[in-house]
Picture 1 (cartoon, rainbow, N blue to C red):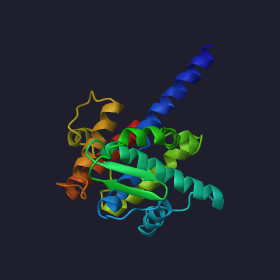
Picture 2 (cartoon, one colour):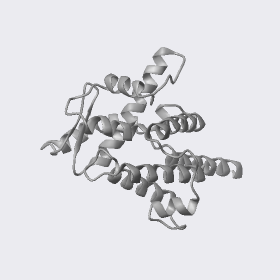
Picture 3 (cartoon, rainbow, N blue to C red):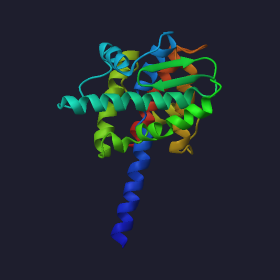
Length: 215
């Protein structure tokens, strides 16, 4: 009984750590592509564009599994971004029609309800791979590429400095950190109105430090 409880506790702890660490870096690249283009995108065109920028690479030696994992990674990022942009903008997430609308559609509630099963599927990392370490290593690789892409310092800053960037103190929980990271990254993203590329890079560096600490 004790062993079962310890296993359950360890699984819960691993899930909490992965929840903090598994922020999909493609969210921010997709925001740039969608904000700076008025056209509708297809999911495979987004994948090609990210690959051209050096932000995507082969994810599996099996071509079919590689295609599935690329699609999962993109759809996960799109649904995460959809939630971040509300209530000011609406991101339509359909495989063959992806775009940001400045005005919320009248039938948004209906669209959200229709998308719910798909959204739940793609936001659950267990559907990508059941091994938490595989997901963690894959995202670490993507974050390294993204850090290089935006020109961030690869060296981690001090924990105290990272928390200051996030306007938090040492009592902050993992949820507090994740919530503030997303708020500030969205606020300062250079392709957003009143965005600031330098502040965005600084926030990314702070996030890397705090993600590493959580691991």
